[in-house]
Image 1 (cartoon, rainbow, N blue to C red):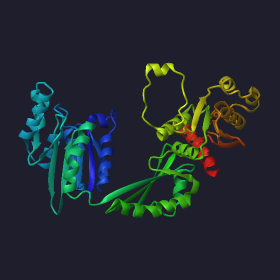
Image 2 (cartoon, helix red, strand yellow):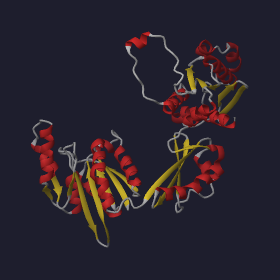
Image 3 (cartoon, helix red, strand yellow):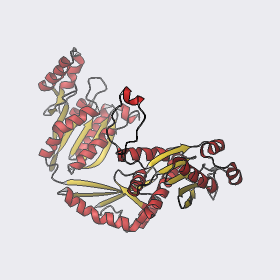
Image 4 (cartoon, rainbow, N blue to C red):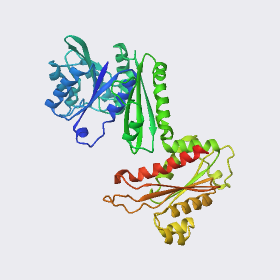
Length: 441
């Protein structure tokens, strides 16, 4: 069974709202083994809506639309469905009773205009909406020479749509054959090489007819290899995916840092925790990105319920909780100029004057200083970003340093790329530098 999602509304086609409904529905459909081939977005225009519905019904076995079921003049989904399928609109008494009951429950008078929400294409069924005035619509469209297309039109309000999916749509799809196959996705995450370089290192994995399928994409300078397998059970899919994962690790080595929801900062926090070591950061060019990511990763790793102290407890001296989870992130300092560098980190002015702020020497001094300042096992630093000249054949470098009890390790990378991602690119390089150094110890 293949599917298409339709997101309806001028607020989406104009870019004012992001279509998160299609993303969510695609994830739920994938769990049932339904492959989503198309995401379509259409504005509040009758002719355009009729055209996309007819196209979707022709090319997909399942169509799930969201939006356009309200009572206002621009809510056209009912009329669009009727015209697209050649059926007339008729009143659904159960839907009208539901709408009236919702208004009575809220102790409000129902405007006459809301009666339009009970108008359904002939032969369709109501999808109950327990907490909204827009019932959903379910239809089965015959297609000569092949199986029917199943159409569900749901409200655009995400909370209502999700409740209706869980309450009845999912079960209806299972009754129609969904869920007999399982689709499992595995994302392998890499950093340190470009998208085309990574693909070139893999032995014909990214091929359209390959089973399991492997796709490649770049997201905020992280390269993601998406492996998708279909089977009768999740275990069967995992078994099909495992050899491909092993091949990727074998071919890419240290470029691979994690999978699925893992980010570089999560890996760094895990490595530090395993070694019972702490890390502090000092940042100039990245303006606190590395510290923010590490702090959030450490919070995720050590999260536990907070208990608000009483006023009496607040007046008492703070006692060290020996049972508190180990937090490997000691803290961070952000500097914005040479004066802040000297004042906050005690980096000698002579080092800045001799080598310049955007230098390896300053990065090394920052790493050593922040390690001392926080009493951490490791100090990680990012230098000032150099002047950028897009026309230059040789881009300047941005410098990193990692200080330990044994000394300081420098690293430099070309300061080149799109301005929108340069800070993220450099912050990830700093984390990847720490990851590789920690992994080697």
